[in-house]
Image: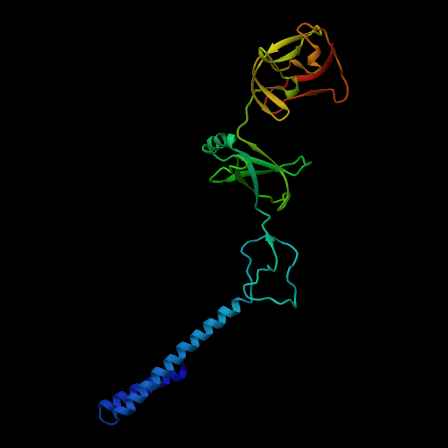
Length: 276
């Protein structure tokens, strides 16, 4: 760059001398050509420096995300080639983490309706764990898989405690809404007959009453009753085939023989096993 600057100054002086008739045109042209050649050399050198900086960047590998690295696949001394398909290491993002699951297409309209009013809460827990991680629906695929009849859904979890792990199988619970003051009975207590759905209700005199009910829907081992029962009533959960309206029964109390359905969603209807 210093030589190019000196050549430009020299070319300027020769042009001044030529204008006064002291220097020849050949000397002025030669001085100007030398200055232009040195300017071109400076540009070429700058391009070489820029190329060296690019090559230097290849010596540093920047991770596109923060996460946890797995086992190293390439070690010191291994031969690494350009466009090699073998990764150096795999990085999995831990926090936040995404959980993918399939939703039956029959439940898609309900999910879309509730998501239109706001975010939908999701819980995920490994089998056998009681404490679930809390997340939100962040992605719904644009088509239903015709082979499975399900649509792919993703939920994002902060996972600050790193309870969820990449590749792990988890049970996902999708809560669309919470119904308060709902009547819930064990599904085993609900029977179907010619007159519709019914349960046997235990009365205070140890006899049973056949009560027709309207079922709103089933939720796991519990059934939500729309009408026909009130909170606190006792229904029979076992031995219904040997019962009839007015039958006198004996309640079989014992470990695992009596349970309650209900909880935060509303009042429980206790279910018991009975023998005529």
